[in-house]
Image (cartoon, rainbow over all chains, first blue to last red; front, side):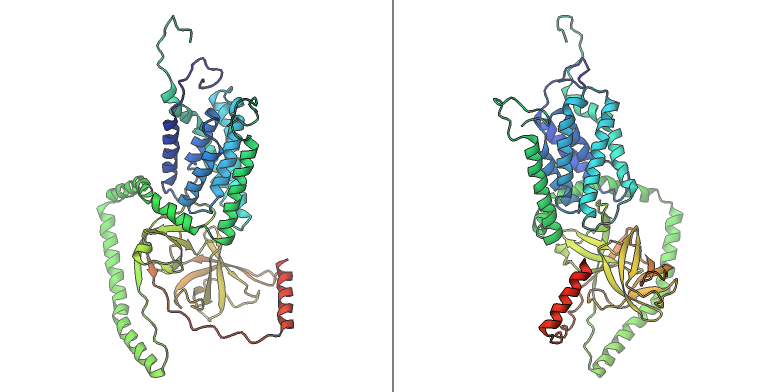
Length: 173
Length: 307
């Protein structure tokens, strides 16, 4: 596995506990009560999309569903709202996984931006059908922040998989 | 488990196809959505998860708490002194009223006894701190730091020093959710303080409220103060609620569009007072006996109105 498919670096296999820890940390970050401040990214969505792209065989829709339920309780929103959105996000991100890793990181961010926007749109449709108020255009800012964070988060989450860069003439890669 | 768009060869057992799993989880989420929104059957699950997650939540408040403490630490002494002086002055200003209040209450009780009326029970309140606004961008809720353990129950009114800010919507062991007046789902019976005109005030989103179902020529003026009418048995009568800020009398509609701004610091944070339960209202008088034909007609009208 490589950080991007065009890279020459080969990654170590991912550890399962690391995936669990990062998802849990994202959940904690989401619990920080920023109130209605616009532009705070949905950390769970970001980390979930990351692992769905990089490890589609390990993290998928089931993880999205469980995390969504946790978010629904923490957010005081309707049960199933985040679950629905995260399941759709996980599906789309897993669909992208074979393709998006061929691109450099900035273009990967452009690929995942529509996923985050679609996730927010799904939440909005689910709530506005039953008569909730429109949260304002600024609410969609959090998708853009999440897409901007794709680049640093990729490095952060892949750190444990990088092997030391010692040049060895006897080793081909 | 297989990746979307790439079916594995049949000899790799990887579970159901992605589309199948998507359909399964999406329908599960939709069932949850309907169960929660329509039937309100998931409150117990929410309570259980919230109770387990309480320590975690407490941990996540730390950064915000620390930032608040740091800000308070940096606030200048002169500001504090000035605030102190203002508070003392306002306390002196209201002391006069407070001193007379006790006397008036006694007098009221005696008069009510003379008139053989039901005594008004004193309503006690519980001071709570507003911790933060709930993250859900589709509704207006705040979380306060008192819950079941402190005797809070759903439906109690919440006020601050100026007026009503909302109603307790959901209680957890140590916290509760307060639905603010500006939420679209919240309605409160009010009357115009100037002339006693009764109406229903409903949240309109974006921090504003709307007086509903008042005729286009209703006697409401800009700047009118709206107070609770107490008809619902939840709010005490006479508590200030909102102020009329905009009246749009379009003759093409039968109702006037009256926009109001809340008086209390609905969207601000600080301390709030959760009022105790009001005594139950006397039972409603039985409906006048209606004939079967009348009720059938009523139903038809309702159906039409819904369409």
